[in-house]
Amino acid sequence: MKNILKELSGVPGISGHEDAIRHTIKNKIKKYADEIHEDKMGNLVAVVKGNKKGPKILLSAHMDQIGFIVNHMEDKYIKVTPIGGISEKITPMTPVKIHTKNKKIDGVIACKGPFFEEAEEAKKVTKLKELFIDIGLIDKEKKDKDQDKEKDLLIQQGIEIGDQITFDVPFVELQDNSVRGTAFDDRAGCAVLVEAIKNIGNNFAGEAHFLFATQEEVGLKGSRTAAFRINPDIALVVDTTSTGDMPGITKADSSTILGKGPIVTLADAEGRGLLIRKNIKEWLVDTAKNNKIKHQLEIGLRFGTTDATIINMSREGIPTGLISLPGRHIHSPTEIANIDDLVGAAKLVVASITSAEKYF
Ligand SMILES: [Zn+2]
Image (tube, rainbow, N blue to C red; front, side, top):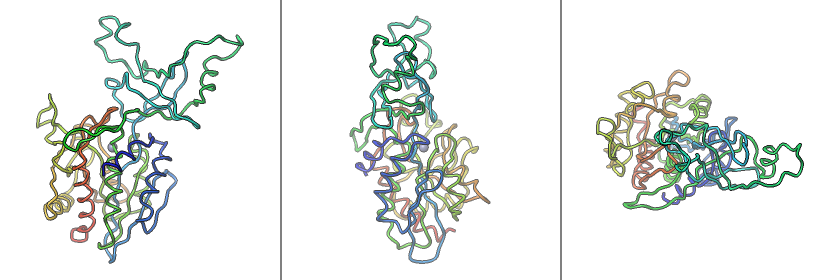
């Protein structure tokens, strides 16, 4: 599991730029699938058929990650547009990579910094539109005074408007089987589904459709169209959540803990997002208990939701559950996950596919 997460979180794929990560996942899972296909939204779906008739189950994790796209060049610096929920408070001075057609360019997303800020300015958060990427360019003599210098700089570097930019944070192992890296939201979910496909076999009723969805971070888009096409009887989404086991956070804000197992989320965004019904809770919680899988329950965070919400509202309504993976510092450049939680989540996904026929 650790190696799968390391590999998947190292492949760039901000929303709308999922080609490389889709290719990587497809290669890892195709030998376990009865059918595999890509759709017009860039989603990847692998179908595994059970050995008897039963419900069609959709399992979903999103492939896309938060990041930036190149907006324009100002002097020697690159200005960006954020893609997905990025907080300006935690972004400055993070190493980044610009992914051009032919090469990767290293840089840092920066602001003018402490030596140049007035006392009042230093107390404030630098707005995203004031940030810029520094790739280390220096001033050069202009050969032709009529040249468009900024356009010229972009062309020289091979950078195009719209190129994707990702946080450049190495994957490292921490204490207690925890790991640190970037894009764990939701490559951790993708890793869990990859592991589940490897282990599911065909000793279950019905069909399991494993969806690796696009563009979740910018409006739950890929899973919406995929759910319509697949038309499942039930669905189960695997995504990350932020645990509350940190200084300054009360149990009432979040009672979830890193390392205490996968989380069955009962509601998020105070019910404006997902609000699961009793039969979904019974299916997932009973399955976890019956299989002795350490797990937690969660009333999710006040803000933010997942693909589970939009799949739940697809077609005539699809009963949908959400397994949340505990994580610290989610939606920041550097996230922490615990491998034991992901191993438990993969077991819970497999057990839930197997037990679904009893509940639906
Ligand atoms: Zn996510």
